[in-house]
Length: 192
Image (cartoon, rainbow, N blue to C red; front, top):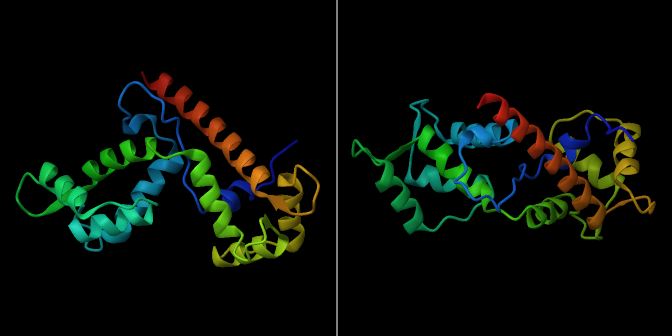
């Protein structure tokens, strides 16, 4: 069955695309999906307010948190020290991108999907209802009708309960991520 147009926007809004963390070779930015690259760009740009192409230690920590990571103060300090060639106490976008590529590989896709599910399930019912989707769409500034949102519920509601269960949500997200990963791998092979 075909995927509704806004499905991945809504379901993927609260989590980034995940990649297989069981890779032998170190990841590099050429193997990131377009969504992952955009997530990194947006997180960096949000804190590079002067468009200098660099962020300081405090901004680095906040940017990493915005991407769902909880860096320790020592880790942030070490990252800055390892990449700060001019003694400015900052990290460049290129370095940030390389570091985040490695970190994104270590995420557990199912855990990330569960975290995203909980962001939708703000009333803690264990399901995502039409009401939950309506709230998320509104928060994202998406003008979606109840009919469009119901299409999303119907598509994701694999057990026909009228709401999206955590299991159905995770399965849909992981399937979409696997498809994105396959497309990114194909694109990376085409560039080699």
